[in-house]
Length: 98
Image (tube, rainbow, N blue to C red; front, side, top):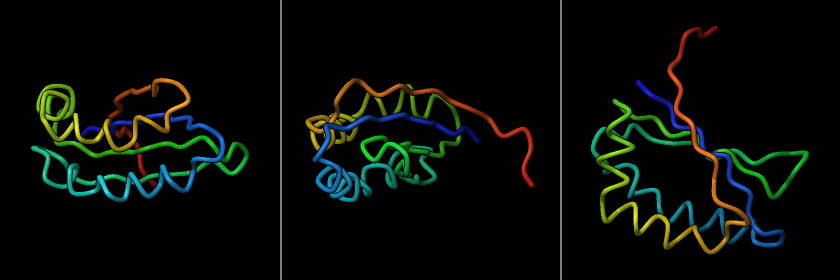
């Protein structure tokens, strides 16, 4: 299992619209090949900053299958207008849970 962590800064004042757009995009992630769901977290200290944590069966399910799909283009069309800067994305694997 791979976790995609996207650090997303949105334009100040657009937070509620961004959150609504992510909610609207939920089905795109849930039907993606290897997609196992996602969580959206909002920073308390920086209210225009979010972290999207998406679970994928494999790295390629995100980087090849999803990013190469029409659903990725639909995702970006929904949420892209709210970005203050391009998201920073990295992929992790769990090494310890408690």
